[in-house]
Structures are given as structure tokens and as C-alpha cells.
Length: 371
Length: 148
Image (cartoon, rainbow over all chains, first blue to last red):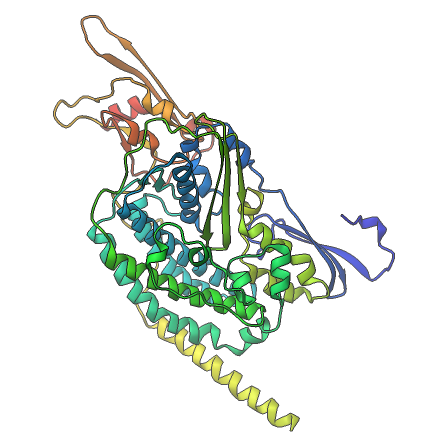
């Protein structure tokens, strides 16, 4: 880390962006070496929200770690639940009833849309447009209401269980979700008119923060960041888990890899998520929502890995078991960490106001990075 | 040539702004979606998972807890303390202490699921505030008695 006393040129200065800055969303601190309005060297400083989640997993039974998974990415907690539940199921060889898998997919996709709507509002808030977040929160609220009715909580869900889900969905849920799909499709038109077609917005994000495909590969960026750069990589398609292989959906990709492309990818991804939910609701099988699991789940000695597509990219759980019911080691590969590591190379030589646009389009969730 | 591009941009930009303003104007005359929270309250879904509470058996009117301690063992954060004693002439143990440390609870619901007798359930309390840590150490037996 550069020291403040080492500045040789008088016009250069250091600027602390965060840890409590409106556009760092959480407790990310970016130390910026500035030359006037231009950034010479941005350096993210992490660890303000570190809660040693990986270590916590080693001190409790494997099923007891479930509520912690939701605390990492609070904006899209259900994919995190999903990944962990599926990991334990794969390791212990537990079968999940098909209905439970469908419920998992439906709720995860709803959560993904909620997360993207939150990002949509927050990005524009960072760019100085206050109105869009009010519209997106109106829709997000609908999702939270639907999910609250079955999961019992609004943000940090602990809905999935090893072997299924904790509560079955009912006709009311199906009805409300269908109504929501119809509603959101109309709302996309509003977003298009209000934001995507707005010339001020376009000028702020077009050509800003260009990440090419090679850079994505070097840093391991995944999710909408990689897809915005033209890499059609999506865990749901490339190594389908759960019942994703049964649905027909596209992976939207961008061309230039700038902030606008990442924005467009996320907006189109929401439409695809709606398609998945619609198909899943049509195909929803009858049956139990929770499989039979042994009272004490013993993890066999050895290791196991499971990847899911979280709202921000590829999330991987890697678990090493030693024959007991407590994991020996749990490694969590979070998408935001890799996506953030792009930042220094991406933002060197950029205007300070462009940094906000570039960083906002990465959709960082800091508690997930620090975990 | 340079000027014509400038005016074109001005036209396209101005048009996009007016379209955007049209959206907000439309929303301006639509019904209000927010509520004035402390004065107006939305109904909470009955499936809401608040902190846990003891429930009474509708037939006997007694709490069906048998002090097996399954909930305390299942809790990931060790926030439940259960104690009971065996009174003379009775077959079952009687519950004497059921303490919930809500500061540590992560609302996962494992305790409710593991209870073999269905003695605990979620409460509907959502607007909880306090000044001290001890205010969140709930004595659930006392709460059950207060509820009547």
C-alpha cells in the first residue's frame, strides 16, 4: 500500500473512497492515488466485513452452516443456500425430490431478479439518477412479498434444507408469481423508456470500463461481467445443476465489454429468468418437497465441489470431509472477489466519476468478498 | 458538418428526456404504492418467521414441551437454553426454564422443525428494538403466561 508521506509530486494526492461511501455499497474502501480528476492507481482495501465464515463452517455440523450462507450475499441469498444444500447432498449422496428442485429453481430465479433490480436502482443512484431506484424497488418489493410468504424472511433466507426445502409452495404462490411475471414484463418497457433510452445514461456508461475477454480470463471474472465481455459462460448452461437442463433459456452476451454491455446483459438476464420461472411453474411436479435424510449426516472422507450461478457469477463451494458430520475445511469461491480484482487494471487512468460507473456495473457485494 | 451532429444529438437527447419524463408523469397520477409506516402498517404474512415462542396445546391448554432438548441441540448458534425437572407423581418432566438469546439467533427455523411435539412456533413480532443486550434474552415461559 502506498504511504501518504511518499508523494513526490505536489499535485498528486490520495483519496479514500469508502469504507462508508454511497457507491461502494457496504464497507469497501478504495484507496485512490489521484492526479487532479484522474486516477493514477486505485487499490481496493478489503476486510472490513470479515466474519470468518469459512472457519465458522469448520466448527459446526454441516447442516448448521446453512443460515450463514445467506449472510454472505444478502442481495441474492437463495443461490447461496442452493449451492450449499446441493454440495452436502452430493457429498452425502442424498436424493432430492423433483418438486423440491423445481421450487429451488423458481425461488432462486426470483431472487436473482430481485438482486438485479436492486443493482439496477443502485447503479443509477450512483450515477446521480434518483428516480429509477424507486421504480425498481416497487417491483423488488413484490418479489420480497412473494418470497416472504413462503420462506418467512425478506432478505437473508434460510429456506433450503439438505434434501429439499423447508416449506412447500401453494397455489397462492404460483398465482402471485404468474401475476408478477406479467407485471414485470410491462415494467421492462418503463425501464427502457426511463433509463436505457436516456442519452445522459448512455453517455455516462458507453465505452467506460472496457473489460475484454482476455482480461476476464486472467482475473477469473464470471457472471454478467464475463458475459458482458462476450464470453457465453453460465454455470446453469455449461454444467447444468438441479433441473436447469430442462428449461429453454438463452445466455445474453455483450460485445464490447463496457459498462453499458454489462448493464444490458443484466437487463436481458432478468427476462430470461422470467422465462425459466414460467416454464418451471408449468412443469411443476407433484410430490414431496423434502426427501428423507438421515438424522445425522455423515460426510465421507474426501473432497467435493459444487458450483452454482449466483446473481453475480460463479459461486463454488469446496468441502473436505473427514468422516464426521463436521466439515474439515470449506472453501467458498465467491464471484464478487474475482470481479473486484479487475478494478485496479480497469480503472487506471480513468476519471473519478467514471470509476463510479465502472465499479457500479461490476455489481459488487462487499460482505460476500470479505465473508 | 460538426454543427449538424450537435443539433442531432440535442434533438435525440431532448426526445429521450421527454420520454423519460413522460414515465414519471404517468406514475405521478397513479395510485400511491407506499404507506406511511409508523401510522399505517401493512399486514404481515402469517408465514413470517419471527423469533420463536412456546405454544399451547389447543386441547389441554398446556405447553406440550417434554424438555427433550432437541431444539437446543439443533440450534446452530446455541441460543436456546432448556431446563426441566421431574415432579413427584408425574411421569413427564416439567419445563422450568426456556431461555432464548435472540441476539445470537439467525432465524433459520431448525428448532421449530426438530421439535417432536410442536411446542415452539414463530412469533409475528417484527419491530423489535431495545437498548441493552439483556432485553433480547427472552424468557419464553414468562411470555407464554403473559399471553394467557
